[in-house]
Image (cartoon, rainbow, N blue to C red; front, side, top):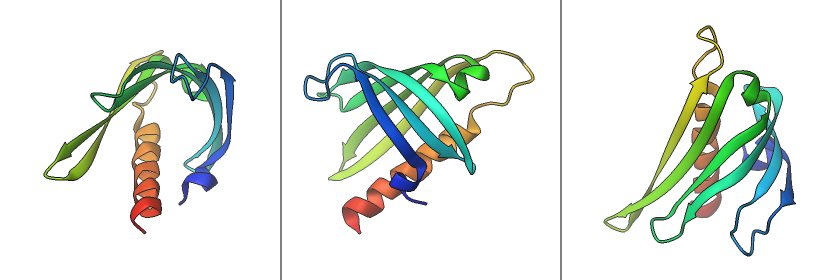
Length: 119
């Protein structure tokens, strides 16, 4: 599995990556072999804490969850970087599943980035 294979299309619809301001983008993702659309806004970024959070606003995930915020935090210990993903969510229905597929996607994405950087 590779990041380009799973991120089919990413479009910046508002904001600027250079300014690192409030940013809205959409992505077509491949999750469990199924193409899914996700539109999110960059809700928070803290360069000092090495942390950012995206709030999902539209797309396939919003058919299952009332709200969803995905946070990534990088912590360095002994010269080694550790990434922690946090998914805050509220189910639309008690019958809906917890977001294990999106979590697995993030884990695989992290592995792909690590492989790309360290070979």
